Amino acid sequence: MSEKPTSAQSFELLQALAGLETDYWYEVDHNWGRAAHEFYVADGTFAIGDKVMSGREAIAGFYRWRESRGDRTARHVVTNFRLLSHTGDAATFACIMLLYAADGLPVLPSLPAIMIADAVGACRRDAEGRWRFASHRLIPVFESGAPATLPPEA
Image (cartoon, rainbow, N blue to C red):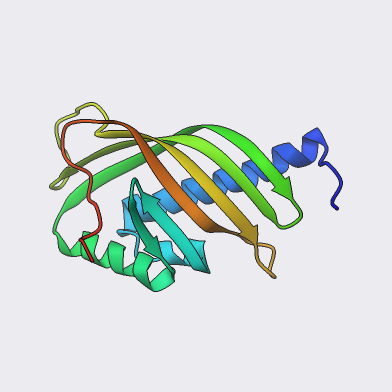
């Protein structure tokens, strides 16, 4: 049984997990998600609503498919981070993700977010001390405007 973390430890952990989330979306927004699968444990899952990708190869395949669609500009904005649980090398956080996206190259018209979702990350720390997603779920709350890119049906 692990000891309850101090406030300072919880803050540092939440900062590390927020860093994982923001680095992930930076990778997606600025590099087509070509390395997004590396943010996951080997058998990790990424879900957008009821669309679930299991394992690094499935996640990498989704981002290859997404890039193959052609020019798209996206910015994933994350805020309101909360540490939900922490025991040893496992932790879960939640935040809010706002997605601004449209097909095409900048500069595009400024429109409202096309999706606002609750994001929940269940994470594990690997042997090198790096936090990775075991499960990364986007739970849409609001959607409008341009459609989000969802993985193709299996």
